[in-house]
Image (cartoon, rainbow, N blue to C red; front, side, top):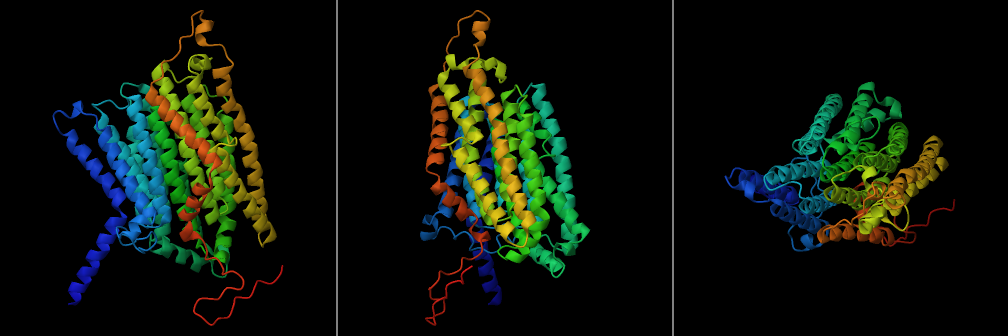
Length: 560
């Protein structure tokens, strides 16, 4: 009897876990089908983009049903946060996980659509390309839901290995092969550093389960605060964050980014610039918030004194270096690579306060970054197909040959700059608002140094926005004000025949950039919901009746 009850309980738990894991299962099914199809003798005659796009959209629909109340109402899915230990605690099923699933799957679907429009890959290589693309997406989805250090490392490697191959996917190009080799070498070193840090943490506390690590951190900090943390724990955390910094392309772990983006196809660069940032930001935010022990404010403040200023310094250096290094770039993909480094710095600014509000602002930033950065890389890919070049010098006076392409690129670049009323302005505004509120809170509290650090980081963020103006506007100046290349060679400037499908894609993303910058409350509410599990419970309003009866109203707080 007891064995039957235990078996029923095990079966029920497995069923609930698999339903919670359904989007990842659908991506796994798509990967297996494409690998099996690749074994066929006539596989090179069929383009597998429809298969990859279909399963990606179905997985996105499943994630959306998990996020909304529809799937819960019909009994198809459990509510996010209702499963305590998914797959024995290796994964966590909460609103942050589901939010990042939708972000990654929606972005992957847009990248697949872009690859169809640009013709990369061709029919012969489509199975390999989309297997790697979906494999990397699967690893990044697992990064967002990891709840154990072992799962963190497995997910990072699952996301990294396909990315190495995608970076060198263009056959016959020495630059592409060199980029992939550099990516592998740097990535292998970063993985080893992160794994060593995990081994130190797990060996010190005897577990890799993140909630248990919280208890271990708290026990060490009792009485002595941060000073109670021994050298092994601090070194382990630093090494883990260094490995995550590689995925974020944060300074000084950014060396791979410009070379890889320049050597890889623009479609691959778009995927790496957004998807890897989203997964790494989610994982970094989850590690920081879980190890902070939210919602217990006292422990959070102690850890913030140790890690908050360090993250702030790295954020300031990363944003400043990315913007300054972009000045002298003449290749558009390389310029966007340094822009990616700068935006990683802005996102790290949102993580510096170590608060749920900061993570929420970063989630909003990721949505905005998805539309504007994908749009910029898409225009570069379209222009590459039309002109055969990605160098800025080849696009002199491009407005006379293709005014629509220049207009669309201007929308995306100005949004990356943060110009209102585009969505990039709303994203930076939320990051800066979090820094201001955190600075005001800490200055008035027991840790004024942390408050002035946040104010200083806010100033650095504003200055970097000014710095970035010059290289974004430089691209538009070359395309609009410079003389066309044909006129300099005494040839007539023939218009570029832009396909209608490419125009539809670019216009759709530009409209989303405009709409997201004007009506950004729904996206802000969604990002707030994504961090629901990390927020402390709100106190009841003054005069409300406490739960449990008694009829006694809650007295209002005393005046300050």
